[in-house]
Image (cartoon, rainbow, N blue to C red; front, side):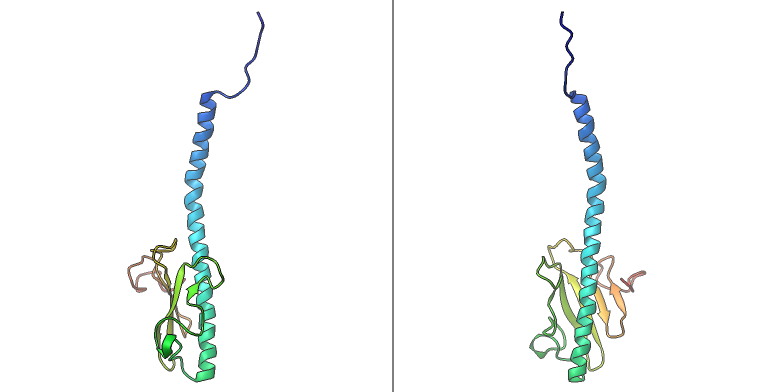
Length: 150
């Protein structure tokens, strides 16, 4: 009789490897998606800061914050800055708007685009005084605890 040794993996060994890969994926994927949402939010925060700089330049030139929106309106999509974030050419996740503007005050908002990966993340706000707000629980206001900053 000839003594032979088999080469390869058993079905049990393969199933154990597949189970380990599944467990690692179950842990890694939610962490990855959470990280990506945080990175997209940080990009919107940066866009709001740049938008605020554009509003300050507008004020320096015109002596007022009014009429910086499309059609010379006090609210709506801006004409002095990009209307969506990220500002570069990549996929857009936030709409940028002027929600209030007077001669001496303004409020800017970054609202997640419906159907995007950020949908349901809550809007971000910034005003002329630098006050920040984030509707963390997506209930339509920034009056709840821990919603007065980014």
